[in-house]
Length: 224
Ligand code: ADP
Ligand code: MG
Image (cartoon, rainbow, N blue to C red; front, top):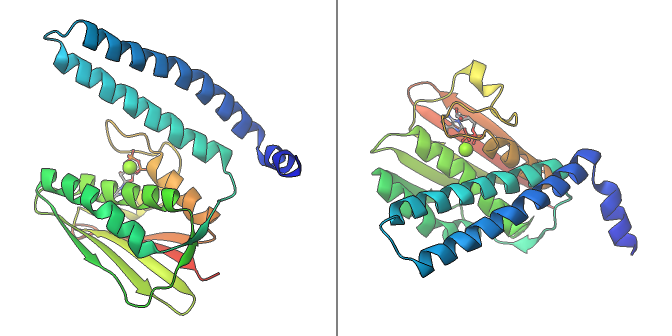
């Protein structure tokens, strides 16, 4: 009971509202998704193309709601000792598939002797995915995404680097603000969520960019 209470206490008013609203939205969306699936099974038709679009958009909306919820709730991280490299390697087929579709390449350079870190694997996956997706979306064909780890005296650095157009100093100030986006289909929640994940892990995230050359996001995880 004690832990439940302190958890409730930790939820801010915004967090509680977000949880309530997202719950109320997610339920009807799940029902719509279910019935859509049923309709398609009961009467297969030439509407398959529309069906796929509707499903994709439902999933996209769900993703936005989930991102928004994790941001607003700002829960303390539930972490355990795990290998950052294992997480990267588990993600790599997914990243490669995405890169292949775009005609881009990926280089992974993992430092030796990186010790296990206190991480929430699911959140770190999302962090790497968000940074990598942004990198790929910024680059044209032939772009190269590099994932790299470095061992420092105080912790481990993860670098996500692209060969895209870069980000102006003016834009760099706004990157991590929720809802800041320059994309037509963007939500602007990706980097805000990255910042929240990193800070809740006791880490730091920074960006270095050279216009016309590319961008590099550096995430620092301290030893614990
Ligand atoms: P979204 O991807 O939905 O736009 P994000 O929070 O992930 O939201 O990113 C915010 C904005 O930061 C993007 O719209 C883009 O303008 C900029 N950005 C992020 N990563 C990069 C990158 N690697 N290269 C260039 N611009 C980037
Ligand atoms: Mg993004």
